[in-house]
Length: 376
Image 1 (tube, helix red, strand yellow):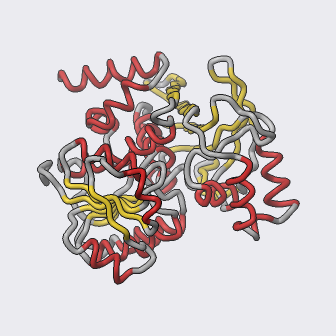
Image 2 (cartoon, one colour):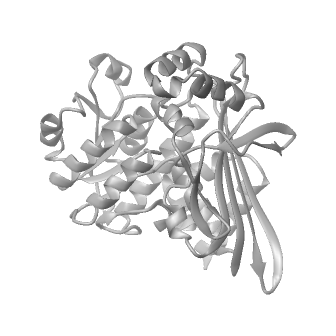
Image 3 (tube, rainbow, N blue to C red):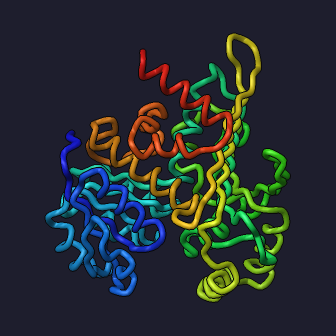
C-alpha cells in the first residue's frame, strides 16, 4: 500500500462530503467532488478539488465516472450506497462510506467476500470513531462486563420544541430513529426498539437523555461476541426529544410516511454550525482480579466555519482513508471500523486533528497515551 497521490472521488456535495473532499485535497490527492445537482456544487467553486455532475443512482454513469479513480468515498444518503458499493467493486475502486444502515452494511459485507478491493462502510463518527473507541475500551480489560457508548450531535443553542437542529443527513436521522437497534445483553446479541431505553445522563453539568438508535455499534456486536456481557449504543439528546419523536413517528405513524417526516424536520430543525458533539464511552471489567471502570468523554464545539458534526464525521472518514493508504487496514474485502487500532487512527493527520480539537481532560490523556506509544 502507498501514501502517494491518489485519484479520489467523493460522492455527495452536502455538508459532510464537501469537507471530506477538502481534507483529502489538502493531503495532496487529486479529488473530484460529484453530485447530481449542479447547484449543489456551486459552493465548491474555487476549492482545491474538481467537481463533476454525476447522478449516483445512474449506475452506468457511475461506473464510467469511477473507471479511472483509485478510491471513492460516498457521502450520499444510505439508500444509494448498495449501488455505489457494487459499482466500486466492479470498477476495482476502493470504497468508503458514512452509512449507519444495518442492511446496507450487511449487503456490502457480502459483496466483500469476492471483491478485489477494500470495502470500508460505516466511517465517520457513530458508527466510525465511536466503534474504534469502544473496541479499544474493551481491550483494556481481561474480562469485560459492560461497554456503554453514547454520542450526541446537538445544537449549542436549542431554540425549538425538539431542542434539536439537523446537523447531518435527514434521511439517516429518520432511519436510525425507526430501525431496530443491535445490542449485547447478558452475553447474547439481540435487537431492541429505537427511541426506547431512555436514561438520564449528566456530563460536565449538562443534562441529556440517552435512548436506543440504530446502527451506532457498527459491527461491534459481531466482533465482541462472547467477549462482553453487556454492550449498548445510545444517542444523546436534550431531555424531552425522544417523546416528541415517538409522537411523530409512532402515534402519528410518520415512520410509514418518511417523506412527510423529512419535510417536517427540514422545516422545523434547520442546519446550524453552532453545534456540539459529545462522546461518552464507559467500560466496566476485571483487571488482575479487581472490578474497575474507565470512561472517556470528548467534546467538540462547532463554529461559523465548521460544525462539530462536520469535523468529527469528516475526520473519522478521512482518517480511515489515511490508514488504508498506509497499509494499516486490510487491502481488500470487507473492512470493519474496529480493524483500526486507536493509536494508529489518532496518529493520522485527520485523527490528530480530532485529538487536538477535542475539549476535556480525556483528550489530553489520550494524547499522552498516544505520545507514549509512538515513543516506544
